[in-house]
Length: 163
Image 1 (cartoon, rainbow, N blue to C red):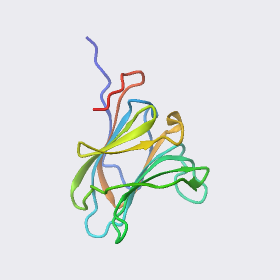
Image 2 (cartoon, rainbow, N blue to C red):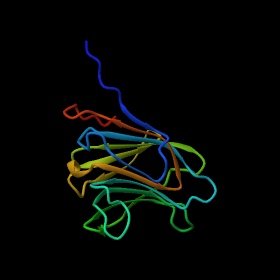
Image 3 (tube, helix red, strand yellow):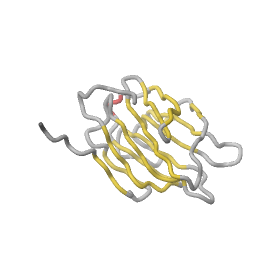
C-alpha cells in the first residue's frame, strides 16, 4: 500500500488572488472554488485561467478561460470567453445560477477538448478550448467574491472521469 499526495488546497486567499496552478492544467485536472458572491452590490466577479502572470492592464498574457458572473440590470448572465494576444473572442453566455449572499462550489474540469463547468454539483456548461490546455499555468480571481477554498485535483496520467 502507498500513500497518495493530499489534494492541493489554498484556504481563504485574499482577493484579488493570483497564483500558479500546481502542476499546470491537463486533461483530468479539476479546480474547485468554494466561496460566496458578495451580497449587497457585487456587480461581477471573475475567475480566469491564464497563461502567464500579466493578468491586468493593456498588455496581458493569454486567458484560456474567463468565467465572469454578472449582477447588473440587464446583464445577469455568466459570460465565458478567452483573450488571445490581447483580443477578446466571441462571448458565450449561460444562465447565472450563483446567488449573492449564498455559498457556492464551482468545479472546472479540464478535458481534452473543453472545460466542463459545474456549480453546486450540477453541470452548468462546457467551454471549448481556444488555447492549448498545457499553456494554462495561473489562476486569477477578482471582483465581488469571497473565496474560502481553492482545491486542485487530479494527477498527470490519471484516468479522466467526468464525475
